[in-house]
Structures are given as structure tokens and as C-alpha cells.
Image: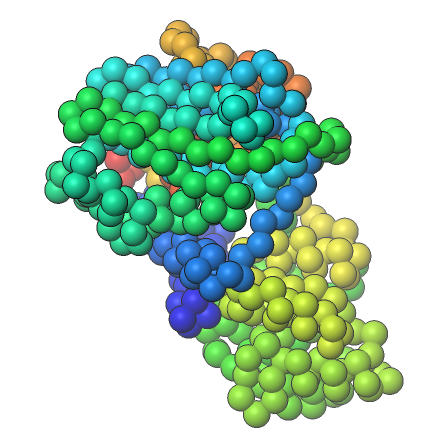
Length: 471
């Protein structure tokens, strides 16, 4: 079902990426395209949550353990939750015990997922008072995480239903958001970590969610800070490259063709492996992308035939599939694929793979200084923020970095904006809360809020005029 749901989303998200790169897009239509993209991203998140839950219940989800700095992991989480709490005029408090090791072995993604769910719920159901996170060493020697709030609490007869999938136990007025998957998935993830989430709650007076897991001390991890992204790719140097796109669905082939043709690639299409092999022999493409599940001849058989032919055995092959199972990824590599991209296809990831396998030298377009590309949604009222754990005036950004962030956000490169903000925070820790907020908003594709947030941290002399059309 995940495969079937991802396939139409590949068409939706693929064409919203294509449309948003169109310089003739008007602000009003650009805002509509952004809403479509945001809605599709939300559907994809729901699909991923259901898939994770299914994987856990089928015992097919494994933790990806590595050494990580616990306090660095908690920093962006706290900055984000602090911002959400501040928006509701409630306090956020965090305490991490000094006797805990700094670097521990854990699955960063899954622990972050659990904590964001528990803390997000705490803020959602608290209208006055505070939300807190306490991390300490339990009597058992394990690490104890406690999330406490002064919110509406949970009725005693509802607590047993909390961790059932698709179940919400709060009042109807607050059930307008959410699917009832978060706590169910969090409980199962904590179970994989060797713990269990427990709840103490008094209706009308708040709740306490806590769990204990073993986080053994580890060696310090290597830095994983990403470099700031380059501007938008508009082409590449050198001779025109030929790509063969093999997929049984016309819309999937069309997405890749329409993404890459404007950059100078020559595209040939085939609707199954048998047709693809014939065209590969005739056309000698520089690179081949192939779906895995196709009629007549699937991608695995197609790849084996390519690798067995003396004229095609060295052709770079990238599997592009809606499959989400590790064995399909592993099998694609076993038969000879050089790389794997999961649908829906993200343009930046596709270009990264093409650049590496074809050894391309990209041509970039620098956005005009002080200008705003058309097609982005217009800003609304300023978004007021303050550093994590306190209040006050937002820390102003350097004018040149403010312009770069604004340009990235305006053209929809939210990953680029988040990466640039992380680099700023790495060089200057006072930008940490801003980087955390941009990362969260980028994950939820909140373009308008990111632009407002950047404006709020932009000195007056670096401000970029807004087009009021469509406001």
C-alpha cells in the first residue's frame, strides 16, 4: 500500500517542484503551488508514520545506532519547543543532569521522533503554566526522560487507550489536528530501545510521561555539519548528456524528463525493461534510471541484462523506486545498480546522484541581490520569536546571510535554507534557536513562516521589499 500511495505522490510532488522553478509563475499561482506541495508532503508524512508503525509491529524496523552528543541532540529540540511554548505564552524548562555522559550510543532519528511527539503534545494540551523536559540518571543506571506539563490532563479511564493507533482521548475541540499515531508509534519505538513510556496524569492538572532507556557512553562522533548549499542549478559544463528513463508509468517518466530537460539533459523513455534494453543498445545513454517493479521485464532482470552485455556493463544505473523496504534496496545493488532513489523523487537528491555518477561540473545561478523570485507566497504579519529559554529581541542576521536565506526560502529551497542556518549556528552559537526553528518549519514545508522568521531576524538595511500581490 505504501508503494501504491507513493506513486501518485511522485507525480504531485514532482510537478510542484517543476512549477516552482518556472520564472513566469505569478505570486498568486505560486502560493497555490506551495499549498499543493505542502499538502502532499503532509500526506507523505502520514504514510511514513503508518509505515513505521507497521514495520515495528511486523518486527522489521531496526534501530540505527551510532555515537551522538546527547546535549547537541536536545538543543534543537528544546529551541523548537521553546518557540512553540512562547507562541502560547507558556514557559518551557529543560534540565539535563551533569552526571550523564556527553556522547552516548543511540538512534538519533528515533529518539528525536519520540521526544518531539511527547513535548509537542504537552505544548498542544497546555494553555497556562509550563512544559518541562528533565533528563537524568535513573536508579537502574539507565537514562530517564521525563516530560511534564500543567495542561488539561487525561481522564483515568482514558489512559489505557493512549497508545492505541488512531485513537485520541482529549476533548473534541482539540482533536482537529493529529491522527492518533504519534503516541502509538512512540511507545513502540521506545520498546525497541528497551523501555516503556509510562503516564501519570490528573485530569485538569497536567500529565507526566516518562521512560528509561540504556544509553551507553560512546566515542565522540565525527562532525556531520553540512556545508551551505550552492545556488540553484541551471545547467552543467561539457557535452550534452543522454539519460534513459525506464518506468512503466508515464507520469513518473514525465516527471524526470521535465525536471532534467531544462538543465540540458537529453532524455529517452522506455516503459519496461525489455524496451529499455533495446533502446539502451541503440542509443548508448550516459546514465540509466530504472523502476524496479514493471510488467514484461522488471528492473532487476533489466539491470542483470545490462551488466551482462559488453557494451552496457559499465553504464551507471540508478534505481528509482517507490519501494521502502531495505531488501529491495539491497537487491538492486546486488544485481548491479550503482545507486537508489526513493519516490517521490526530490530534485536536489536526483541532481546530487547525477553529479556524482556523471562527474558533472554544475552551472549555478546566483539570485540577484536584493530581489525576490516570483512565485513565492507573500508574507503576512511578522512572526515574533526569541532565543530559546528566554525572551527579548531576535538576534539580527548579517545582511548578506539574511539575503541568502531570504532568496533560498523565496524559491522554495527550504533544505538549503536550513543547511545555511545550521552553518551560521555552527560558526556563531547565538543563531542556534533560529536554525532549529527554520529546520522544523522546513520539515513541515512552512514557506510563509520561514520567510517571516528570516524577516524578523533581518536588520532594517538588509530588508527585502515584498511584492504585495496576492496578500
